[in-house]
Image (tube, rainbow, N blue to C red; front, side):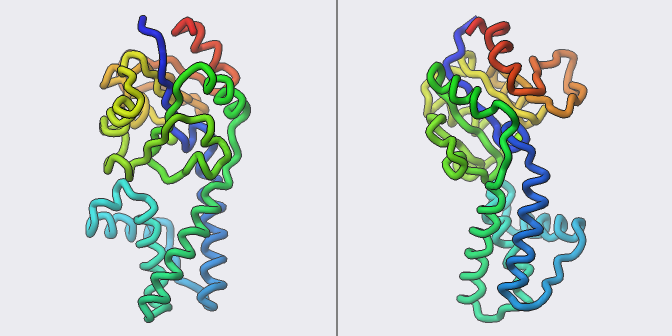
Length: 235
Ligand SMILES: [Mg+2]
């Protein structure tokens, strides 16, 4: 078995739980925006919110892989009835997005993630492959990674091969010497595996593997990771 030289990681739900972060970010950003506008904003139901996003994506397919731009366009949609001056609107959209992004980075790392990454960073090349808009440099762990690839960089989302191919180009390390870790069975595990990349599934929810008859190596706590790496890759 080839030696692992590069380890790539998903971020959301792999290093932290994203749902609680987004719920809090959404709530705080809404309050912030209403105080800026000085009146209540009609946010609609969750279903309406998702429908707005789908309509915006239909109008501009780049929004599918550019969550930042999608967020900005959603903010614009909600501000439109309140602000007619276009310059004022553009400024507030940018300001609101920055506020949301700040809230979105208030993550709580899963236990032992950072310790494990610190340990690995002295032994392996490490990379980030994310479909989201979290930035490791805003989380104080950017120094542990050699590179970071977001969907906007490759204009597609995992499980499409573009993230993985870009990682190979940047690192110069073959797929067979790469290990990808993520929580999503399809986006992370199947996507990587289809290219011949080694995988480990971070399965904190203990979900059943229902993709095929060949379940991946999995773990549900970061304290297990180093042992698994040693057991399966001898490193
Ligand atoms: Mg994820």
